[in-house]
Length: 181
Image (cartoon, rainbow, N blue to C red; front, side, top):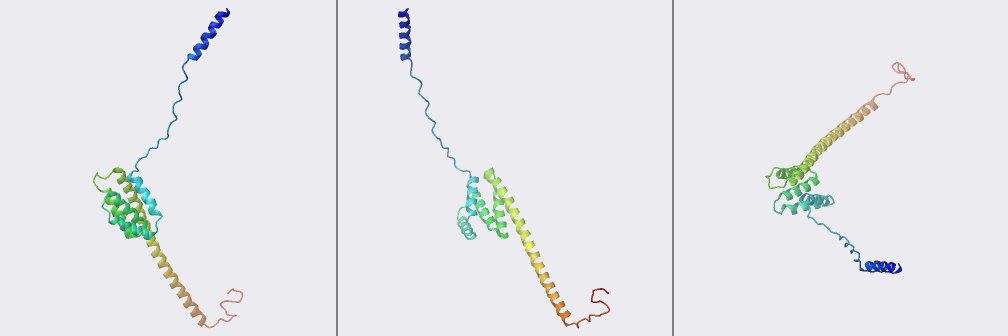
């Protein structure tokens, strides 16, 4: 029995040593960076962000740089963004013209670029309405100030006339000292 026991033990030991080593661990996943080229709309949004930090004089210089470049829908949108940031009525109208040119072009302009131009056009139109409303309010303010000055002069003239009138007697039959009639 001991021999059988030793034989089984020996068989188990030999089998255990002959077993295949454990499978190797899978390699660690490496980081994969997917680099994609930004779309034209993303480039335009980035361009707009760069315009926002520029002072007014720099935006004017940027417009001059854009004027010498070959015409393209993307360039028209860039010009419109710069003009819209200047905010003057004439600049807003010119920006709207550039955007309408992109919106109304044939099918060679990508749809996302035309949709972006449409959105900018609605923003420029809103800015135009606000500029017109501001002009109207400024005219009303100027008119109100002229009226206030006119009434102030009239009040001063009335005070001058009143100071030339003879002083009232305190026992006047119209008004007593206690303020009753």
